[in-house]
Length: 171
Image (cartoon, rainbow, N blue to C red; front, side, top):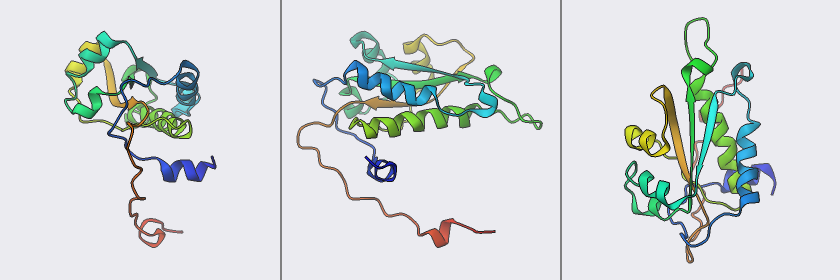
């Protein structure tokens, strides 16, 4: 698929087939896209957690209560520690940006593989940390389910976007 098509086609999937897990090779290609993502000063301050085991998926359900989330056969979390991230002179940490770039690379790679995702930030951080066994200093910025659409799911029409004249400024 052409890269622009991948970007245009990607949408948040909220209808997963729980009986159709993603094969290991596909999952590894998705994770590789995150691993090779750029980060400030190449610090790579991330850890990726791919959850496929039923017991941990059950624990993850406590962090986000939407029923469709519970059907996903896999969940991907991106975490990092501020101590591992680059800090600008004014003290601003690159952690959130670095984790966002890595997650976005993996979400686009998933779309390219025909695997559905949904960017989630509205989770309970304490419940998520508990489910993943994270240290106090580790921050999870976002999670996404990974899986194939349920039978009968239909792709939505492309969402309206502001025209370039409203969003781009040439200087």
